[in-house]
Length: 251
Image (tube, rainbow, N blue to C red):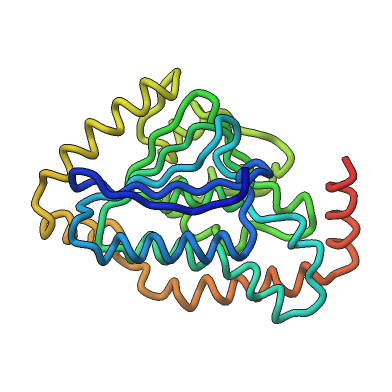
Protein backbone atom coordinates (compact mmCIF):
# COMPACT_ATOMS: atom_id res chain seq x y z
CA UNK A 1 0.00 0.00 0.00
CA UNK A 2 1.07 3.57 -0.61
CA UNK A 3 1.42 6.18 2.11
CA UNK A 4 -1.63 8.28 2.91
CA UNK A 5 -3.19 10.71 5.35
CA UNK A 6 -6.97 10.87 5.31
CA UNK A 7 -9.80 12.14 7.45
CA UNK A 8 -13.52 11.48 7.89
CA UNK A 9 -16.33 12.96 9.97
CA UNK A 10 -19.23 10.91 11.29
CA UNK A 11 -21.76 11.91 13.94
CA UNK A 12 -19.57 14.73 15.17
CA UNK A 13 -16.45 12.57 15.42
CA UNK A 14 -13.55 13.51 13.16
CA UNK A 15 -11.02 10.75 12.49
CA UNK A 16 -7.55 11.25 11.02
CA UNK A 17 -5.61 8.20 9.87
CA UNK A 18 -2.05 8.10 8.54
CA UNK A 19 -0.14 5.20 7.02
CA UNK A 20 3.30 4.52 5.59
CA UNK A 21 4.50 1.09 4.41
CA UNK A 22 7.75 1.47 6.37
CA UNK A 23 6.27 0.92 9.85
CA UNK A 24 4.29 4.16 9.63
CA UNK A 25 7.47 6.23 9.52
CA UNK A 26 6.93 9.87 8.62
CA UNK A 27 8.69 11.63 5.74
CA UNK A 28 8.30 15.40 5.46
CA UNK A 29 5.43 15.16 2.98
CA UNK A 30 3.48 12.89 5.32
CA UNK A 31 4.00 15.23 8.27
CA UNK A 32 2.87 18.20 6.20
CA UNK A 33 -0.30 16.38 5.17
CA UNK A 34 -0.98 15.41 8.78
CA UNK A 35 -0.72 19.04 9.89
CA UNK A 36 -3.17 20.05 7.16
CA UNK A 37 -5.72 17.42 8.23
CA UNK A 38 -5.45 18.42 11.90
CA UNK A 39 -5.95 22.07 10.98
CA UNK A 40 -8.84 21.31 8.63
CA UNK A 41 -10.79 19.30 11.20
CA UNK A 42 -10.03 21.93 13.82
CA UNK A 43 -11.81 24.49 11.64
CA UNK A 44 -14.70 22.22 10.64
CA UNK A 45 -17.74 22.76 12.86
CA UNK A 46 -19.03 19.28 12.00
CA UNK A 47 -16.15 17.72 13.94
CA UNK A 48 -16.63 18.14 17.68
CA UNK A 49 -13.75 15.85 18.68
CA UNK A 50 -10.80 14.31 16.80
CA UNK A 51 -9.45 10.76 16.88
CA UNK A 52 -5.87 10.38 15.59
CA UNK A 53 -4.79 6.90 14.52
CA UNK A 54 -2.51 5.07 12.12
CA UNK A 55 -3.17 2.25 9.69
CA UNK A 56 -1.88 -1.30 9.69
CA UNK A 57 -1.62 -3.76 12.55
CA UNK A 58 2.01 -3.40 13.66
CA UNK A 59 3.78 -0.16 14.61
CA UNK A 60 1.79 2.95 15.46
CA UNK A 61 4.61 5.20 14.25
CA UNK A 62 8.32 4.51 13.75
CA UNK A 63 9.16 8.21 13.88
CA UNK A 64 10.98 10.21 11.24
CA UNK A 65 11.90 8.66 7.90
CA UNK A 66 15.50 7.41 8.01
CA UNK A 67 15.64 7.38 4.21
CA UNK A 68 15.01 11.11 4.21
CA UNK A 69 17.19 11.70 7.26
CA UNK A 70 20.28 10.19 5.65
CA UNK A 71 19.84 12.34 2.55
CA UNK A 72 20.20 15.65 4.43
CA UNK A 73 23.30 17.54 3.32
CA UNK A 74 22.81 21.11 4.57
CA UNK A 75 21.58 22.91 7.68
CA UNK A 76 18.43 24.46 6.23
CA UNK A 77 17.22 21.13 4.87
CA UNK A 78 17.93 19.55 8.24
CA UNK A 79 16.09 22.25 10.15
CA UNK A 80 13.09 21.95 7.81
CA UNK A 81 13.09 18.16 8.19
CA UNK A 82 13.08 18.26 11.98
CA UNK A 83 10.45 21.00 11.96
CA UNK A 84 8.01 18.41 10.58
CA UNK A 85 7.18 16.86 13.94
CA UNK A 86 7.35 20.30 15.55
CA UNK A 87 4.57 21.42 13.24
CA UNK A 88 2.47 18.34 14.07
CA UNK A 89 2.85 18.87 17.82
CA UNK A 90 2.00 22.55 17.54
CA UNK A 91 -1.02 21.80 15.34
CA UNK A 92 -2.29 19.30 17.92
CA UNK A 93 -1.83 21.60 20.91
CA UNK A 94 -3.38 24.60 19.10
CA UNK A 95 -6.33 22.69 17.68
CA UNK A 96 -9.58 23.98 19.21
CA UNK A 97 -10.81 20.38 19.40
CA UNK A 98 -9.85 17.74 21.94
CA UNK A 99 -7.69 15.06 20.31
CA UNK A 100 -7.81 11.37 21.26
CA UNK A 101 -4.82 9.27 20.17
CA UNK A 102 -5.17 5.57 19.36
CA UNK A 103 -1.82 3.82 19.87
CA UNK A 104 -2.19 0.23 18.66
CA UNK A 105 1.50 -0.69 18.40
CA UNK A 106 5.06 0.44 18.99
CA UNK A 107 5.77 4.17 19.06
CA UNK A 108 9.32 5.39 18.41
CA UNK A 109 10.75 8.92 18.44
CA UNK A 110 8.25 11.29 16.91
CA UNK A 111 5.55 8.66 17.41
CA UNK A 112 6.04 9.10 21.14
CA UNK A 113 5.71 12.84 20.60
CA UNK A 114 2.34 12.36 18.90
CA UNK A 115 1.12 10.12 21.72
CA UNK A 116 2.07 12.78 24.26
CA UNK A 117 0.64 15.67 22.24
CA UNK A 118 -2.85 14.17 22.32
CA UNK A 119 -5.25 15.33 25.00
CA UNK A 120 -6.24 11.76 25.85
CA UNK A 121 -4.36 8.63 24.77
CA UNK A 122 -5.57 5.04 24.47
CA UNK A 123 -3.15 2.17 23.89
CA UNK A 124 -2.93 -1.59 23.67
CA UNK A 125 -0.53 -3.83 25.57
CA UNK A 126 1.59 -3.96 22.40
CA UNK A 127 2.25 -0.21 22.45
CA UNK A 128 5.80 -0.16 23.79
CA UNK A 129 7.72 3.11 23.41
CA UNK A 130 11.29 4.17 22.68
CA UNK A 131 13.20 7.42 22.10
CA UNK A 132 16.03 6.21 19.85
CA UNK A 133 17.42 9.59 18.82
CA UNK A 134 20.51 9.64 21.05
CA UNK A 135 21.50 6.23 19.69
CA UNK A 136 21.89 7.72 16.22
CA UNK A 137 23.78 10.80 17.33
CA UNK A 138 20.94 13.31 17.62
CA UNK A 139 18.50 13.64 20.51
CA UNK A 140 14.73 13.96 21.08
CA UNK A 141 15.00 17.74 21.18
CA UNK A 142 11.90 18.69 19.16
CA UNK A 143 9.54 16.39 21.03
CA UNK A 144 11.12 16.81 24.47
CA UNK A 145 8.84 19.67 25.63
CA UNK A 146 5.65 17.71 24.98
CA UNK A 147 6.99 14.40 26.31
CA UNK A 148 8.34 16.05 29.45
CA UNK A 149 5.06 17.91 29.95
CA UNK A 150 3.16 14.63 29.78
CA UNK A 151 5.34 12.26 31.82
CA UNK A 152 7.73 14.49 33.79
CA UNK A 153 11.45 15.16 33.60
CA UNK A 154 12.61 11.95 35.28
CA UNK A 155 10.64 9.61 33.03
CA UNK A 156 11.62 11.62 29.94
CA UNK A 157 15.29 11.39 30.94
CA UNK A 158 14.96 7.63 31.34
CA UNK A 159 13.56 7.28 27.82
CA UNK A 160 15.99 9.73 26.24
CA UNK A 161 19.17 8.42 27.88
CA UNK A 162 18.49 4.68 27.59
CA UNK A 163 17.85 5.16 23.89
CA UNK A 164 18.18 1.56 22.69
CA UNK A 165 15.53 0.06 24.95
CA UNK A 166 11.78 -0.27 24.47
CA UNK A 167 9.65 0.50 27.51
CA UNK A 168 6.41 -1.40 27.93
CA UNK A 169 2.93 0.01 27.47
CA UNK A 170 2.38 -0.61 31.16
CA UNK A 171 5.40 1.59 31.94
CA UNK A 172 3.96 4.30 29.68
CA UNK A 173 0.58 4.03 31.39
CA UNK A 174 2.16 4.30 34.83
CA UNK A 175 3.97 7.46 33.68
CA UNK A 176 0.66 8.91 32.36
CA UNK A 177 1.70 8.83 28.72
CA UNK A 178 -1.30 6.56 28.18
CA UNK A 179 -4.52 7.17 30.06
CA UNK A 180 -6.14 3.81 29.26
CA UNK A 181 -4.66 0.50 28.10
CA UNK A 182 -6.35 -2.62 26.71
CA UNK A 183 -5.39 -6.15 25.79
CA UNK A 184 -6.81 -5.99 22.27
CA UNK A 185 -7.45 -3.35 19.62
CA UNK A 186 -11.11 -4.38 19.59
CA UNK A 187 -11.51 -3.57 23.28
CA UNK A 188 -9.62 -0.31 22.83
CA UNK A 189 -11.65 0.79 19.82
CA UNK A 190 -14.92 0.13 21.64
CA UNK A 191 -13.84 2.35 24.53
CA UNK A 192 -12.52 5.06 22.20
CA UNK A 193 -15.90 5.14 20.48
CA UNK A 194 -17.72 5.49 23.79
CA UNK A 195 -15.58 8.44 24.89
CA UNK A 196 -15.68 10.08 21.46
CA UNK A 197 -19.48 9.88 21.37
CA UNK A 198 -19.70 11.45 24.82
CA UNK A 199 -17.40 14.28 23.77
CA UNK A 200 -19.23 14.81 20.48
CA UNK A 201 -22.37 15.43 22.54
CA UNK A 202 -20.62 17.80 24.96
CA UNK A 203 -20.56 21.60 24.91
CA UNK A 204 -17.99 22.69 22.27
CA UNK A 205 -17.27 25.92 24.13
CA UNK A 206 -16.58 24.06 27.35
CA UNK A 207 -14.23 21.65 25.58
CA UNK A 208 -12.43 24.58 23.93
CA UNK A 209 -11.89 26.23 27.31
CA UNK A 210 -10.69 22.93 28.78
CA UNK A 211 -8.20 22.59 25.94
CA UNK A 212 -6.85 26.06 26.71
CA UNK A 213 -6.32 25.07 30.34
CA UNK A 214 -4.61 21.81 29.41
CA UNK A 215 -2.08 23.64 27.25
CA UNK A 216 -1.59 26.72 29.41
CA UNK A 217 2.00 27.94 29.34
CA UNK A 218 2.89 26.57 25.92
CA UNK A 219 2.31 29.68 23.81
CA UNK A 220 6.06 29.98 23.21
CA UNK A 221 6.32 26.51 21.67
CA UNK A 222 6.11 27.73 18.07
CA UNK A 223 9.47 29.41 18.62
CA UNK A 224 10.88 26.84 21.03
CA UNK A 225 10.30 23.80 18.83
CA UNK A 226 11.76 25.62 15.82
CA UNK A 227 14.87 26.31 17.89
CA UNK A 228 15.05 22.64 18.82
CA UNK A 229 14.69 21.66 15.15
CA UNK A 230 17.70 23.84 14.38
CA UNK A 231 19.77 21.96 16.98
CA UNK A 232 18.92 18.63 15.38
CA UNK A 233 19.40 20.08 11.90
CA UNK A 234 22.99 20.93 12.82
CA UNK A 235 23.76 17.65 14.58
CA UNK A 236 22.55 15.52 11.68
CA UNK A 237 25.39 16.91 9.57
CA UNK A 238 28.09 15.70 11.97
CA UNK A 239 30.34 12.81 10.96
CA UNK A 240 29.37 10.95 14.13
CA UNK A 241 25.66 11.11 13.31
CA UNK A 242 26.12 10.18 9.66
CA UNK A 243 28.09 7.09 10.65
CA UNK A 244 25.60 6.17 13.36
CA UNK A 245 22.63 6.42 11.00
CA UNK A 246 24.39 4.34 8.34
CA UNK A 247 25.19 1.66 10.92
CA UNK A 248 21.58 1.69 12.12
CA UNK A 249 20.22 1.30 8.57
CA UNK A 250 22.61 -1.56 7.80
CA UNK A 251 21.30 -3.71 10.67
